[in-house]
Image 1 (cartoon, helix red, strand yellow):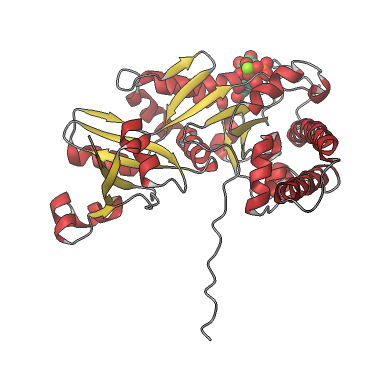
Image 2 (image 1 turned 90 degrees about the vertical axis):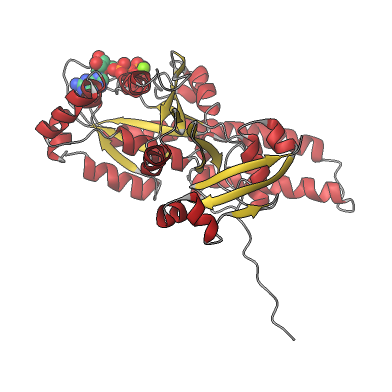
Amino acid sequence: MAPKKVVAEKKTLLGRPGNNLKIGIVGVPNVGKSTFFNALSNTSLAIAANYPYATINPEEARVPVPDSRFDWLYETYKPGSRIPAFLTCIDIAGLTAGASTGAGLGNAFLAHVRAVDGIFQVVRAFEDADVTHVEGDVDPTRDMSIIQTELRLKDIEWVEKHLEGMKKTGRSLNSTSLADKAKKEEIATVEKILKVLSVDEKDVRKHDWSNKEIDVVNGLQLLTAKPVTYLVNLSERDYIRKKNKWLPKIKAWIDANNPGDPLIPFSVSLEERLASMSPEEKEEEQKKIGAQSALTKITQAGYSSLDLIRYFTCGPQEVRAWTIRKGTKAPQAAGVIHSDFENKFVCGEIMSYDDLREYGSEAAVKAAGKLRQQGKPYEMVDGDIAYWKAGA
Ligand SMILES: Nc1nc2c(ncn2[C@@H]2O[C@H](COP(=O)(O)OP(=O)(O)OP(=O)(O)O)[C@@H](O)[C@H]2O)c(=O)[nH]1
Ligand SMILES: [Mg+2]
């Protein structure tokens, strides 16, 4: 008998489905969130002439995500216009201890966090007597614990409420009908989520869920299910010399509490300074101080934390990057450009960026048989270059 073919199950992504994802800037008060946000949106405003909608409203900015592949395509096609991939960032007010029970801007804050898909958590590791710390002194890991506790408490409250409701309507469930069986399974998963949060004291995203469970987790839109990128705000001096007394402790805290979450040291005051300069001045300043702005690294990390990838459309008029979620199929990827492309999808002519790089021109890629027609089941790969064909 032939061995049974084992097909690895494709992991469902945590989080809301869709391609239009947002990242929120979160932290305790006065750690430099808005200053960082302004540096980010200045960066997008500085090139706003080229790209529409850099700033959507004062708290929301679309920040270009640098990509060397995109730059190369632009140099190669020399189109009239270029539109890179964007990361939508949202500035959120500071979170204080007790927010989950309504302290400070408590519930409003948590509603804002619920509305984003990922978190940039700004952690203050700079000393400045002029900048008040709500907790009295600078202590980054205490601040990280505060945020984690508040988000977790809110999740616990949310899940408990949900569970209560489910159990109430579930009383009459019997095991014979399929729908009732599914309902029971769902209750069991919600109970497990509650256990992970309250007994294991883990963030939801740190548990290895099955696909079936992920469907339930995603339905609940939990705060601790959202990916977190820790941005540690250092003084300019510490950032330049790559040394800070808190950094080892912060690393250890992440390893102990949320292993694997990315940590990026940066300096908000340096970014603020650089953001106000012309590109030439900025280049010169970075050379002079011997350190680079961390914004590129930060936006790239935020983008990939949301499981976003991009494909390109290239031509003499425009080179453009389109943001999609990992695992997106060709018709939905085409639909990002226009819903007609999805509804009347015929096929895509697709080549990989690497092949174009290797063969040097579209014609050469085609001659090598590497420009392929892809149908509806095709799953997009990061860096694909696509021409869509849609019916009339
Ligand atoms: N020394 C120093 N001061 C900073 C830095 N970042 C921000 N500040 C100052 O800290 C104060 C608060 O900065 P914001 O960016 O408004 O802080 P925030 O985190 O948005 O604060 P809330 O919105 O109130 O939670 C301002 O006076 C900033 O000038 C930094 O990197 N170094
Ligand atoms: Mg602020």
